[in-house]
Image (cartoon, rainbow, N blue to C red; front, side, top):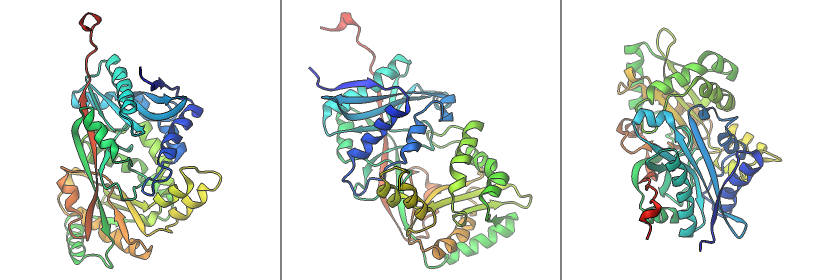
Length: 387
């Protein structure tokens, strides 16, 4: 008889806080794990705070043994993604478990049963509610410090997934670039040619309020257009766009943001980066209070030698025309001025050659790989068939 009991939890702040803290405690002695900001994960899992619930439904589960939490998982159905891909996928995310096959199997079984009840035929993950959530299980690079936008997990997770019959659905790769001492000459030359040929220019802001007012909506409209064909991406709704404008544009270091516009002032490309918050989140253990805000504020002010490349998007009609050179010709001088030595690409689909080509003029190494796994959802065995 199993000693592991899996229970659904209510999306209340108290239960979700306990749920999120399991992962932070699970990795407390691991120097490469970067905890989430607890309040952000609670908001993501709360129907009244996450606008993705307009087209998603979800159920979180905890695994208990002798009254102690030994694992977590959230089952998610993204109806918009399923309609776009013509699939019946139950996603799973927030998957954490001790190194015990009984625990991992029980968690996956709970997610699978929930998905089956909803008529789903495939189990895929780890994925979030949307493509802007953390996704992909780490399969290479366990000795590398993660970023605020990525999942960390122990190496044994991979063995558990394989033993449970999961197969590869998609892979993402990540690069760590050395910030050059000057803008590569080829970037400067291409940037000049492209700017003159298409009448483009880069613009900077010194006011977060102004960038939100003038280009907040346009930034996420561009993301919708540029990312529309990527794996797992669904168009951001007006409520989501409003949510991300309020949540993220207010904390950006504007020197690390580049907007490219045409002669009419229409946005055609963006490069959004920010100082790495990894060390700050480790020091705060994901807590904003009582002193976590101090570590985060210092990082946002740029007291780190790593910059995270969060978002690079180019209007489809301008893709493969060298517009990325304009972005980096603008950003690299700011990186040098702010003392960044390294840049983290964050996850890129391994099949997205166009994105990876933009790093070819930099000293770089591919240092992490992560994976989404897939397994068919088994149909329930009728009682008459059980022997």
